[in-house]
Amino acid sequence: MINKIGRRSIRFYETNHSVCYFAGLLLLAHARLLAQSSPDLTLQIVELMSQGPSGRAHQRFVHAKGVVCEGSFQASPRAAAVSKAAHLGGGVVPVTVRFSDNAPDINVSDSSPDAAPRGMAVRFGSGRGTDILAISHNGFVVGTGEDFLALLKAKAAMDTSKSHPWPIETFLESHPNARKFVQDAKPVPASFATESFYGNNAFIFINSEGEKQAGRYQIIPVGGSQYLDDATAKAKSPSFLSEELQPRLAKAPAKFRLLLQLAEACDQTKDSSEVWPDSRKTIELGVITINSVVPDSAAAEQNLAFDPTQLVNGIELSDDPLPTLRSRVHAYSVAGRRSK
Image (cartoon, rainbow, N blue to C red):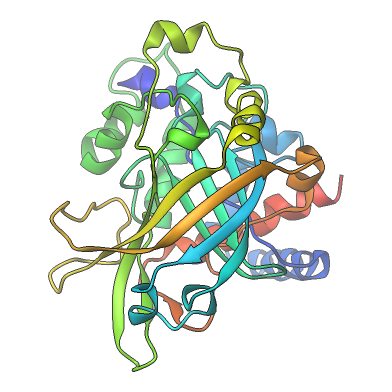
């Protein structure tokens, strides 16, 4: 168990605000810090995450290694019944997609356990648009910022010379969803195009009648999920997932079904580590079609940032605390890499 958690990094995503906004946010956060006897939750998380290899190199705190693609989204006829969001009303909408490995290290091998769970971030529309952030595991590792901070502290306190139980073992024993997250199988996909992704945060969807429905995104490859056996995965190039994507897309676009899993009255929405039953109804919102890798993916990654709180009319935050916390934490990550 401890080896698995030692090889896992917790992923958060990026925000897309102006450099001036980042500077203002940093000044505000530091002013708050000076007014308190101890750092607030955001700053404590930032301090620990920034000590990883990508943080020290002024890259993304996690999901440092990725590839940017472009394509389109076509909403299904049923989507408008759930939400009045513009991109769900019909017509073709451009999308920007970033696939990534989980690790806080741009040099991670795609077949390494550190690379899982992988990420898929989607921006609908040009300009600011609206974003979806998803990972290849159904259920996040923890449900609160406080627990995430406790997990980071437990990992930072790792010292194999000490006797058991180690802090990380104690944390996992007291957090069964985190233990499941670590222990669940995370096979290596044959391609980013053949992986399934889950938006574990709940959002509130509002239709033109004012009706509200809580839901979570699922992004499923049209051809089904496909994975490699261990021997085949280990024989691959360290960056095979991004390397194989361009020739794959040159032959045919990759297509994903964008689903919305609907909550029932008994389903909580504030804890992204709690998975809703598979029996819950899903609605197909539409199809994401990925046509190509952008010409200069590295440059695109430098400027591109995703924000789970970047929403449009027809979609609102739920009582899940993590999207807002992610947005705040990654303001620091984005400000750091844009100041390089």
